[in-house]
Figure 1 (cartoon, rainbow, N blue to C red):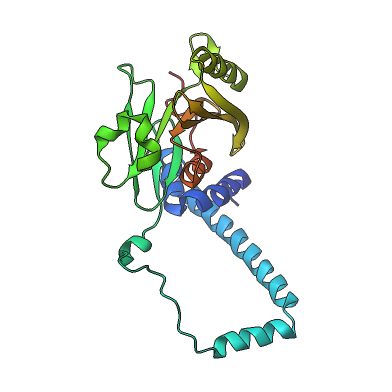
Figure 2: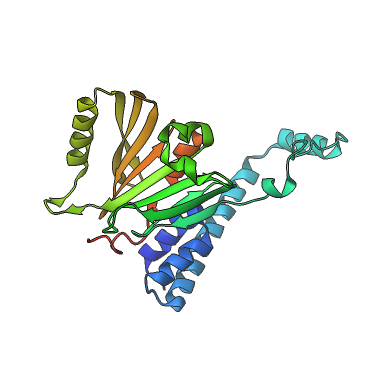
Length: 252
């Protein structure tokens, strides 16, 4: 029998990032393939059992009216509406999300048509900077944060929580960000948020220019996601952020 915590971890993160990405990360973490296979099998069994139970409840709740409605739909001769818009590339509509693995042991899920590229922002290779952008975006636009909202670009910056003074906590980070914004005389709003049980807060600025930044504190890594506005793209990518191996390379 596999480790229940490992089974629960696979069941949770496979929904976000896919089986292949989670399996790859577990192998990188040094887990034996046999243990991984056993855990995947048990996770899949539990998922199938839950789905069967849901289907049984759904079938039990269907009455005569529901059956008649289903028959009417089946007998209808109305042609199916096309799922691809005129001029749209059919292959693009069938593309699937991809996963980005960060240096500090985290993963992001990218929407279809998006790529991500990471680099270190400093000579000491302490701060990892990741640009998330639509395929074909000119990299010259990455440096102009004012274009992010218009071009659908996001930037993620990560760094270890440990600094010479100790570990940076959420309250320390929040106070530092507030003081910095107030010193810049920025017009902003701040609210708390949680991403996969990682505490954080979102800053929405109106002046000196419009942007949104999410600050998240993980076990040993701190994250800052930057975008032009808090739209669906920003929310989806932020919610996909997950620590997989938070101890890997995060003790610099």
